[in-house]
Length: 347
Image (cartoon, rainbow, N blue to C red):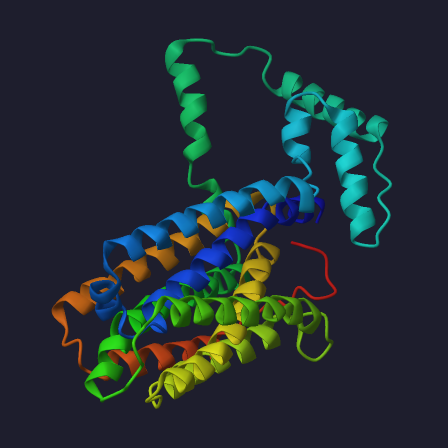
């Protein structure tokens, strides 16, 4: 739990940058429906201004992380550098932040290390120092052991497979919706105004602000006894799909903005739970590999949507409705996850 807690603390600033960029991406491709027309009217100067604003926003978020977040170094990294006292201090800080008490001491940590060293010496008195042996030891880090551990038991394999499917479906649904919805609505006679700079950035601010309480609400919902991680993830994912489907009925800019406010809110709840749930249900020593598998599935399926957009009819309404249906299906899949981490220690 300590390692997971520090991981969350390290990546808090990265989460903010990811959410900010995601909101901008969703907005630019999902709410400024006449965005190609806007570029023609506003010209290259407006485009340069937008890019400069985004660069400035990223630099600002990079700077505030030093002041708003107290980032702790990984205990594993500190122990690897022989800084055992600092590693123990980090463990106590994380425990205190979670309302727990850790009884770990430097003496206990060093005694455990001494025991493991003694076992290693007893088991391998002579170490092969040849170039081939050294290369083999380095390559052993890339063995399939961590992947096999994620599928070690039937229940664990079932959990890992469902998580990969969830990340893959969500990775496909988001860009699939964004690739087709603007053309779909335009072909249905939707009128979204002149796409002025004022309206563009006003909508961006509204969607970004609406998303913030979604993450906060997720933190509260996941601790409710009858919801937990699975229930919150399932409900928020289904609602995200519902708002996506409802947005196809919009015929004005304000109507579309309203639907996307709901979509932004529920998707932030969904992502907040998904990013927290995934590492919790992976075995501690294999979390990095598990996160890599789910993230890879998310990106690989995300690549499919622009390919579909290239070869499919952009005016077709089928991909948009499929995207909404995928979210709804993913919500029901979340209920099938075998592990509920709420109130339990990590695996």
